[in-house]
Image 1 (cartoon, rainbow, N blue to C red):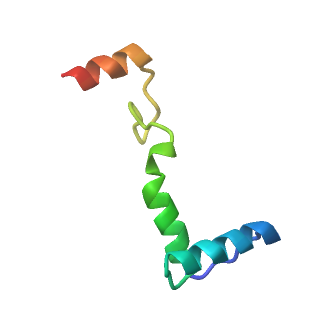
Image 2: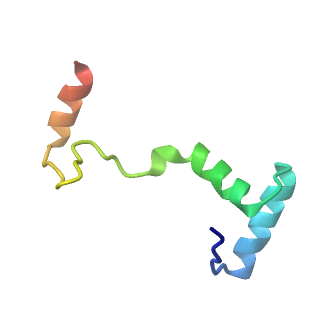
Length: 67
């Protein structure tokens, strides 16, 4: 599926520069490359279920990771 997105000119220039620097072939590769290395910026999904999010405190999460 092909999609189009709107970008500011400066954003397109930055993507072009990054694409060239990293020797990537497409903007899709650029975006996936950036997402791969910034996956820690995605919000934490601890306690999430398909039905509804569970409500855990930060302390609950820390205890879970200590196990």
